[in-house]
Amino acid sequence: MQLIDPNHPIYKPLWVRVLIVAICLGWAIIEALGPQPFWAVLAGGLGVYAAWMLLFSFNPQPPKAEAESAVAGDEAEDDEPTDEKK
Image 1 (cartoon, helix red, strand yellow):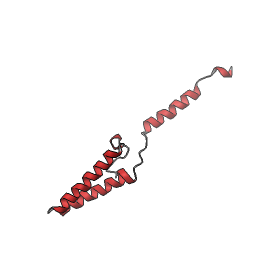
Image 2 (cartoon, rainbow, N blue to C red):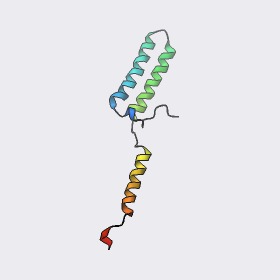
Image 3 (tube, rainbow, N blue to C red):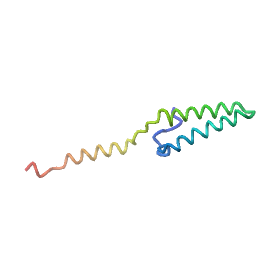
Image 4 (spheres, one colour):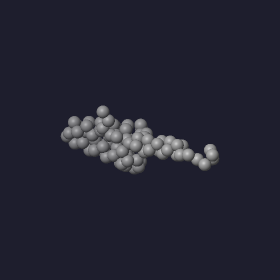
């Protein structure tokens, strides 16, 4: 089960991905300094997961609809008759 979809267009800019990770890990530090270690572990785990998905293994794929339409467009051009064959 994927909690973060790396193909979503919101994650394309690097600054957005870094900001999400920084907020999660920053909140974990704030909670660790307070009396709630459970929330610190939760926020830290979310920060580590976000860092893994958005920074280390980030490799977005183009949507299938665009890829299929591009392939279909290439095939349609090949099927058109040309005047050179006459």
